[in-house]
Image 1 (tube, rainbow, N blue to C red):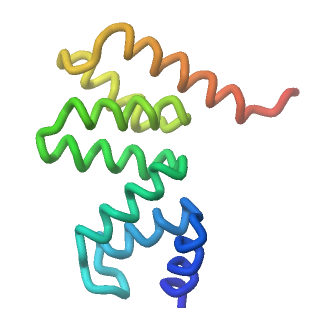
Image 2: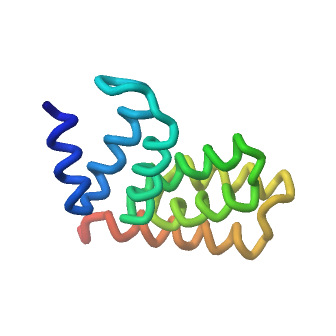
Amino acid sequence: SAFEYWTKAAALGVAVAHYQLSTLYYDGQGVEKDEKKALHHLTEAAIGGHPRARYNLGCFEGRRGHYDRAVKHFIIAAKLGNDRSLESVKILFKAGYVTKEDFAAALRGHQAAVDATKSPQ
């Protein structure tokens, strides 16, 4: 099953596999819903450089009222090219949770990530 393959790949440190497992555990798809396991795999995926996982961690922390931690996750994900994270940084900047310097750094990092994915034509 897909779950078994994702589990084996996650054991090898594959960030995408951790991300997929996090969504399965969070939604309870094919496994018993388990927020603790979902958060574990989401964290591992984020550490492994998965931008969407980092964004989701920011959302998780924001829902818990930990805006300082949410901002850090969103800035990291924005610098990895995640558009939703950049939008979240912008919203939190307007709300006063992000400094002008951090917002500018997130914008520059996001643009650099986007530029790095473009073809040199």
